[in-house]
Length: 196
Image (cartoon, rainbow, N blue to C red; front, side, top):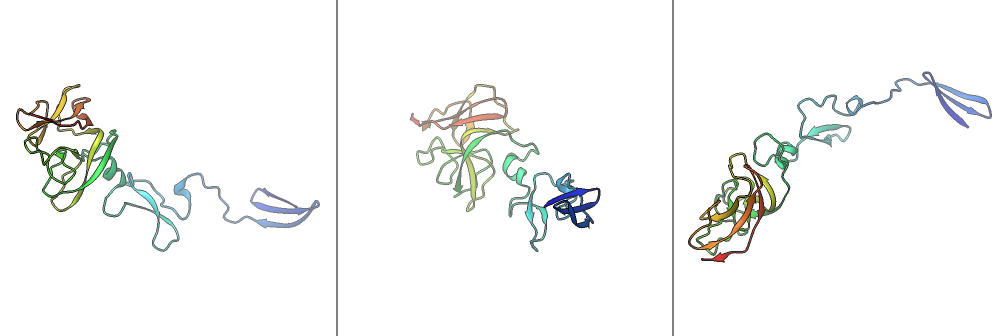
């Protein structure tokens, strides 16, 4: 048996005898995602969203992860500047026990790190502001960027009081938390403390 398509017909042959000729109504080759009949017909305004099955389970539609807005923005634009971050870092989720501003040194137990308090040793840098009583992420190693920073390439960065600084503290303990890659990017590498 042989099945062929000629012009707009499907031809079924068996031993050189044509058994059926079926007119191929509506046959069309899809050349792109948006030309399929059960998918969105445009990509306009859908940047950062993903495709998901609709609630009737009959077609695909664009959507955002629950509670996070646009997928790319939520994951790859952590400094909310409208540009996808090129940074790569390891993260840990913490439960904040006080309000922690974005890009602040933070402890694993949910406090702002403080070089004058041995109970508040830096474990990472918050990626967003974290409200007391809520969970948030901090980078524990790797590169992070913040357009508000103005470092010089190669600056050694320390926890000084409750901020990241080029100057090491003179009381409490010294803890280097990273190095400036450029003006707005740091490479986090949390070091052990040195008591003063």
